[in-house]
Image (tube, rainbow, N blue to C red; front, side, top):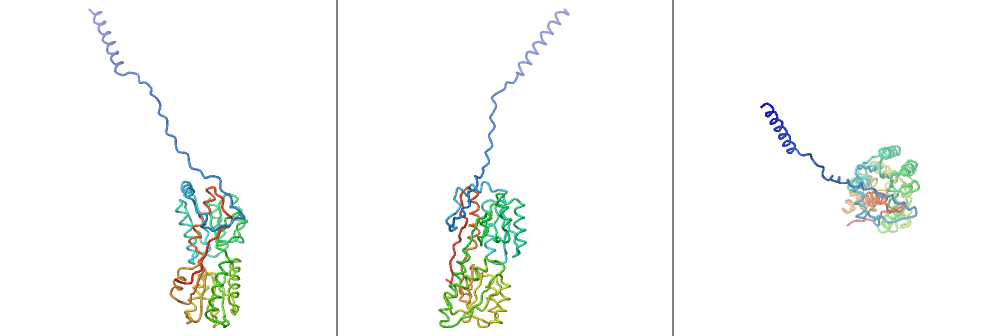
Length: 354
């Protein structure tokens, strides 16, 4: 009886074990899913070349749609540094802020460092951007201030664009500017012709507000004087007085009025200084029948005064906003693999009222 019970227990255990095995089958391995490959990062091609003998008008070399798309896809986290000569004149403010905006629109981080018309600080600003690993640096400084630093930066692959000058080309920079001599000639011609028409057969005294700290601005003042005298040989230039900024324009026009109270023409290397000179003339009681003012840059305030029929009679529009945008476009054309002429000219026009 005991043997029979044990036999039945063993059979029951085997049956339960078999059922358990059947309830938990050994899992089988199916096909392995292939991982989704990560997209390859977009890379810029080798940069283009700066053509040392090339020259075009800036509007002839815009970024193409394909180049702009490529730059936007690769610019995140990259820095564009802008070394400003000053931010106190409307020209430089428009120039630098338009470059900053264009760079930001392309996806860059863009910073402005204001050198406050201090060449030592301009060098510090430039070297600071180099140390930050900037991809592009825009500057309006000259070779005298930045020549060696620019040569070193371009040797490291940083794209440098010089605006309002051309002497950094030998250091490897793209140069983009109005033609410095042409704008001086345009202003001088306009002032001389106005004097000949308004005060015919008279000797006409004139003063020039210059800025002798920079050789390029001495050259511009020379061009103004040369063209003014060619247009009207009866003009007598009483002297040159430092302008360039509103404060200097006010102070030195007051000095000029003390020495030469009868001058009839005020010309200058920019509207920034001329607007200060204009204010000094107003304070001295001068009016449109007494003096004519001609400037460069077409600062919005100068344009408004021209349109109102005041002493301010004309300006050369140097297109600062367009210059900033063209500078960033030229640098990015190079980065996108296209060749860029060594000198890109900014077109200008003369404005004498509506």
